[in-house]
Length: 169
Length: 169
Image: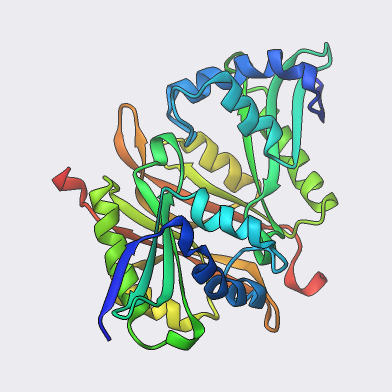
């Protein structure tokens, strides 16, 4: 499958929400209220962030999405934050990898120097491994910082990748 | 000096802004735009957070302020975040200690299980030591995550304190 990633457009929402909703409702990976309204989810994912993208196959079907935004303001605004979701029926087809690589290129293009994930749930081992393979390091462990629906209070990781070394900028 | 801490009231803003403004303008400790407008600062400090307090001496003068809010939503909303600022002319008089202790009691009262500081600038050694004395641990180091006005890109710490142990709740 050829994966195509392009900027989100407002008309994409009806294709994006069915990808996000089961992930938010499951409450296993994202620090989002499990009962979040569609309107609030739309604000969270597509309005508040600086950049939003959708990923699809070469037939044009949307199978994943990610956002990119500054993780902090002012003296912290050179570090960005991203969130990625892949459609449940498109897992294992390389979309997360493609979006992760794409987001790093976009981050550099937008002038960011580093990327930080604030709350990677420790039980989400597949994601942790994936980010590690892409050069992200676990720089911190937040004890019992995430309430998993079946595992209870579980640790979460802060993961970080320097995109531009201190010596080059 | 007896320190009194009470909930922020809307009429306190003219006393609070002169405490926040020099700290935000200096850009040495908070990830806030150095040129933030008074209106945006007011929103950031007194509207968006769940709880806001002011600290003063027994004469009623306001010399410090802090906010308390959930650090994440949904499955992460049992961890709170606080920000504290002490007036430059009241440093070394125990206000930060008093506000830190007060905030932990308020956090417990509001049902939080832990407190997290997301970006404690490494060069702000006094603050790091103070939080450590109050039981906060450096659980992560964010490389070059803060652009200090004179030191350049410096590390920042994620600091965390469990308020309620896993065995007690």
